[in-house]
Amino acid sequence: MTKKPKPAPTKTVTVTARPEAKQTSPDLDPRFDTCTAAKAAGYGNYREGEDPEYEWYDDRDGDGVVCE
Image (cartoon, rainbow, N blue to C red):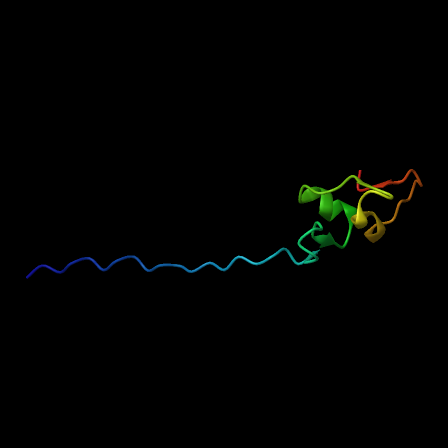
């Protein structure tokens, strides 16, 4: 009698949001702890008076644009 090979075990992977991204309104980008994290995720260049996300970050050079 020949034995059938056992199937390889399967691995379940759970994907969750990055911890530094905070879920916000569906009309807004995710909120990150820093501009560096936002830019790394492909977000950024928020303009004062145009983008609500502008208020979340520090405009260090005062030019009206953050995460540039």
